Image 1 (cartoon, helix red, strand yellow):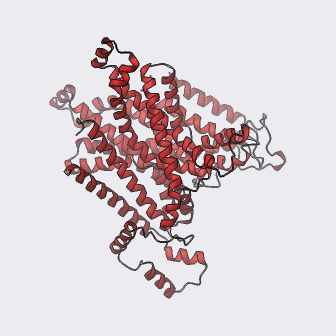
Image 2: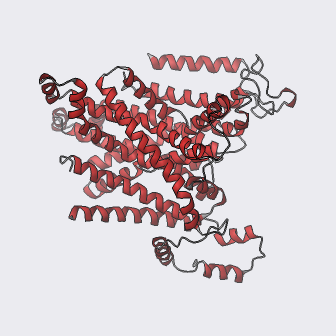
Image 3: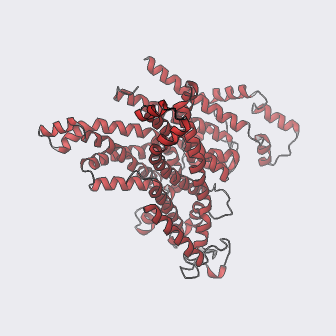
Amino acid sequence: MAGALGLVGRLALSWLAVVAAAFLLLRTMPGDPIEMFLDQMSVQSGPEIVAAYRAAWGLDEPLTWQFLHWLEGFVTFDWGVSFETGRPVAADFAARLPYSAAIGVGGMTLAVIVGFLLGYLAALRTGGAFDAISRGLAVAGQSLPAFAVGLVALWVLGVELRWIDAFGGGPVERIVMPMLLVTFFSVGAMARLTRAGFAEVKRSPYFRTALAKGRSRPAALWHHGRAAGALTLIAGLAPELAWIIGGTAVAEIVFGVPGISERVVQAVSHRDYAILQPYIALLALWVALVLHGARGVRRALDPRIP
Amino acid sequence: MIRLAILLALGAALAALWAAGAFGDPHAVDLTNRLAGPSPLHLLGTDHLGRDLATRLIWGAMPSLMAIAIVLGVGIGLGVLAGGAIALGPAPLRDSTQWLAETALAVPSLVTALVLSAIFGAGILTIAAALLVTSWAPYALTIAALLDRVRAEHYWRASEALGTPLSAGLRRHLLPNAWPAIGALAGADAGRAVILVASLGFIGLSADTGRPEWGAMIHEYRMFLFTEPRLVLAPILACTCVTVLLHVTLDASDR
């Protein structure tokens, strides 16, 4: 219980540190958002207009107050309006999050399931066909640019084979294809991690004992190795889950998915800080959750980990 | 052996390209010769404005090479320093550096680059900063773990008892142990840097939109994917070749 409380406390502290740093960085950057906003609206600006906006947006308060106000707004889902479109940011995010989450979580779940089985099969016969496949997938995932693979997949499936409608907006193109792209780029790493866990069990004396008792190799490896395989998989899963945000970003852009990352890329070119600040906060929350969550799960599975 | 072969092959390829006149002006437009196929004059053919594809590919390597240099130079340097701080520093420095490294490990570099581009504007320095934020951490944690292991060995304590200065001890006992691990990390890291530069270029946040860059080229030529796949496949292949070569040359652990 105390351990869980400490975990939550550390999680909250890391999140606050990152969010405060991002807030400070965004606010102290050269370029006054009000001048930029007035420029964009092509309004004849005078000092009193600037002052009025400054007061309306709360930019005349000290930075600490601004941060606390922003934090209060973030926690109560009052995320302000986009400088660019004038629409509420929270509603925009709520409409886009399901797409990003479906692609990221769906792709990752598939990668974990397929990767675990592939890792088991690869460890069962070291140097066999499944070992080669998992190695090839791992190398491809590290050395191919994701957006290029997505483009080529569009070309092959959409134009050469005509299995999908390359520029249509159906569920296959918007969810399934980007999901498979995410899976393709994670499954190799997952398989290699799992294989390492299984391979260690294969070298252990109790595995030989199980074989001597007459169990078949696949049954013995599955029975004794699946916990070890899962443990190494979870250890490597945390950074992979954090990276997935970058992976979904690329998939969203290639397939034209109306997800969060696509919106953020627009916001970057327009310097729309109202979008960027909650995005960074959500991102930091996700990364902190994944890191601390993975540590908690590993500790629960393996009492030897301090 | 493999490294020497790769180096020789690279040199030969560059010399051949130079002899074929592929180092010319990547912006030279020739509208009478648009979308021409490969020929002795244009080794890979020309694009929709009649520009030489091979020349653009060569100049397009520049941002990637710069990113590799930054990751391999500054990233490893910072990582070694931080790793030393974790393993040898006083408790507060050790704990804070370790926390920082574990956090940086989880930061997605593409997203960092996006956010930094919004703040500082797109440019090679922004890409470099994004790469640095994330690339030092694995080196730091690896070096720290190695240092801890080496310092528990008898030969380390013997060399300490003999009065060897710390720097000499590190050079003698740590470096030979650290090199394979660092090489494997560096191979993966340099490859990631190349892919990051290309991804940013594809999104439209490349260092300098006027200059050729592989990702930007893929973006620019993507409408010819169906009619002239050569234009898109060439930069993709260039990107892949570089990352695979980096893996093979720097990572000695597989052999």
